[in-house]
Image (cartoon, rainbow over all chains, first blue to last red; front, top):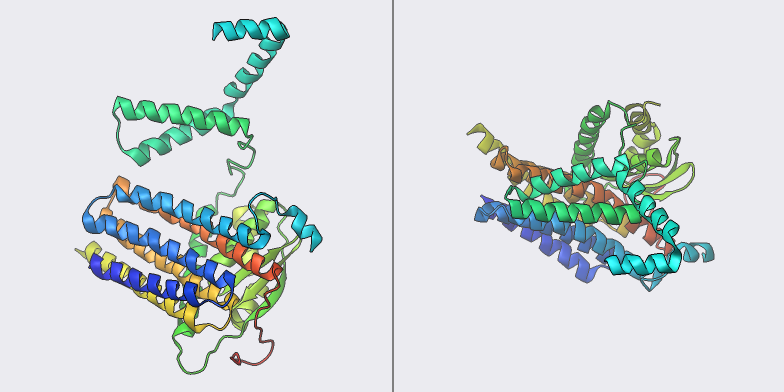
Amino acid sequence: MFIAVSLAILITMGLALARALTGPTTYDRIAAVNMFGTKTVLLIAVLAFLSGRTDLLDIALVYALINFIGVVAALKLVTQKNFHSSGEKERKVE
Amino acid sequence: MLIMAGKFIQLHGINRLAFYLLNWMHGILEMKSYSFAALLLLFWVFLSGHLGPLLLGLGLVSVALTVFLSQRMNVIDHESYPLHLSSQLPAFIVYMFKEIIKANIDVIKRVLQWQGSTISPQLVELPALQKSDLGRVVYANAITLTPGTVSIELSQDTILIHALTEEAAEELATGSMAKEVSSRVFDE
Amino acid sequence: MIIDILSWVCLFAGGMLGIVGGIGIHRFPDFYSRLHAAGITDTLCAMLILFGLGLQAGFTLAAFKLALIFVFLFFTSPTASHALANAALHSGLKPKLVMNGRGVGS
């Protein structure tokens, strides 16, 4: 049964990956990658129970945080073209 | 260590050293950092699940380091302990779960209707009457958390919202969720 | 026994909702409406799967960690959605809107 659930999650990840590859705009791609990351967290959690090693849940926990930071960093890179400016300046220019 | 302290006294005088030490002690002795450290330690124990001396010692060291760094960064502020929130917070969480499930069912229906799409995307501007920044953030997060509505832009007293359907936009416009936030989270 | 069945139902429904969300991000016409479909998988799907796993775990440290994952997901996913939508709007991406009547043309 855990195998069925992980298969369903894998199908969802495949669909998200297809959207990330075909997505017309950059934001579609980032949203798809965000969804892919959330599914990865769930997949790791299910795999932890499938293999009976609940230590894997720590990895899922860390992945949930890293996924968020990664998405925000990618957004910052896309909207500002760099990592070092603060973003306040750009808002004023617009 | 002692040689360094001696050099420091030679350079800046004993008063200066006492001043720095006092400043440091003052930071250490602040009540908030104690409760923060206790919370972090509890967190460590629950996450590791081991009570051996080695792992507890490592935990103590990392908690001390974290408290020291967050004090230097000044991130332990008045908002880190949301004790001023209402006692009706659990009721609000139950309300949020109900709303999330209702909105989910609606969006799922619209995804699965094959012939002819029934979505009607809307941009709506809603008033955000919450007094504090935290209130507005809680409201915007509650809107985004229910599928079918996403808050796009948060300004001083309005929130710009993208809604998947007219019905979702109309339901938000009645302001029932805003009322829940202000009455159940902030006792306003 | 009843708890087992309940947890399987939750896990199964969660997996199905994930697939529905995956179909949704391919069916909806523009970026902003796709965010709503991604919202399904971020909220109810994650909720059901984590709850089902928690029922399997019982009152253990694993259940505590699952609850922690749940809390983190529920704080970060609306923030990420809002940041995405805000950045898209500021970059000039216009949403397809329907002001009166039903149905989107494309």
